[in-house]
Amino acid sequence: MAPADQTSDQIGSQTGGRTPVLVHLWGEHFPTDAIREHFPTVEFVRVPTDGPVPDGVAGGACITQAAPTGNLQEVLARGVQWVHTLGQGVDHFPLDQLGDRTLTCARGVNAVPIAEWVVAMVLSATKQLPDRWVTEPPRHWVLADLGTLDGATVAFIGFGTINRATAERLAPFGCRMVAVTRSGEPSEISAVETMTDVHAAVADADHVVVGAPLTPITEGMIDDDLLAAMKPGAHLVNIARGRLVDQDALRRSLDAEHLGLASLDVCDPEPLPTGHWLYEHPRVRLSPHVSWSDPGAIDRLHAAFTENLERWLANQPLINVVDVEAGY
Image (cartoon, rainbow, N blue to C red; front, side, top):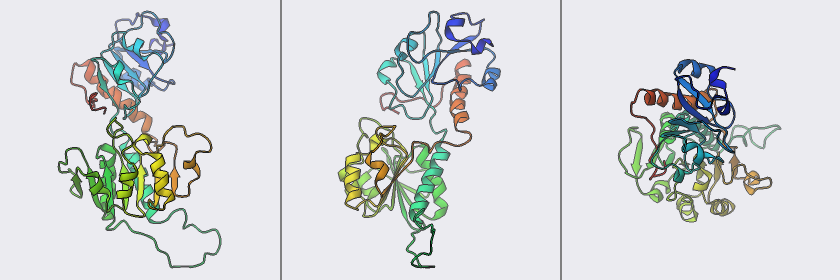
C-alpha cells in the first residue's frame, strides 16, 4: 500500500515531510492515482466520516461532503483552516461548525450537464414528448398543437452559473429570457433581461427555471402566491433544491390545472419515499437528482478542489469562496 493510500490510524502524524490534507469523504473515489502523482508533496489522509478521529491526524486543509457528517466538528478541530465541500450547494453543510475557517465549493463545475437537462425538459414540454410518440395508429396524422420556443418566454429565478449556462443554450432558439437577481444588474448575456421583481418576471413566462441557492430567505419561495402569479399552463423546472418549492402549494396548483407541468430533478425529502404523490401525478416529471451527471462530472468535482489545492500550497487566494453569511 502506498503511503497516500494509508488510513489515518496507520500514518498518524508521520507524513514523511509531506503536507497532510484530510480526505473526509464517503467512498474511496478521491484521490485518484493521477491526483496523487500531481501532488507529490501532499499526503492525502483519509479520515472516517463517523466515529472517533484517530489520534495524530491533523492537517490544514480538508475536503469533505457538502452535507453533515458524524464527526465533522472533531475533524475541523485537527488544525483545519480551509474546508472544501464536494458539491456546489452548501445548504446542507453545518455552517455553524465552520468558525473562522475559509469554505470553498465546486461552484458551477457541472453547470453544463444541468443546463442540458433543463433544455431537454423545456423542449420535451414544448414538443409534448413523450406523449406524442405513437405505438398504434393515432386519431390524426399530420395535425398537432405543438408549441415553439421561438418567441416563448423563459424566466430564470436566480442567475448563477447553471441558469447562465442554460440561457446561453436557449438563446439560439429565439426565446425571450428574463432573470431575477438580487441586484438587477445587466446580464453579460445580451439576450437576457434582468429584474428584481420575481412576480413580474414569471407573469408572462411559458417556462420558469428555478436555480436560486437555498437560504433561509429563499426556502419555500415558490409558494401559492408566486405560482398564482404565473400564467395558466406555465411549466416549472427545478434543478436547485427541493425546499425552494412549497410542495403542498405545487400540488394545489397542479391539481387546479393552473400550472401546466412541473419538471423536477430535486424534491423534498431526498430520497423520496415510496408512494409519494410526486411519483404519480400526471403533471409531474421527476428525476432522482441526476441532472448533473455526465462522463466527466466526478472528475470536475475533483478538479474544483485540486485547482484550489495548488493555490493553497502556493499561498495564493482561493477561488469559489463561499459567503457564509449569505449561505452560498
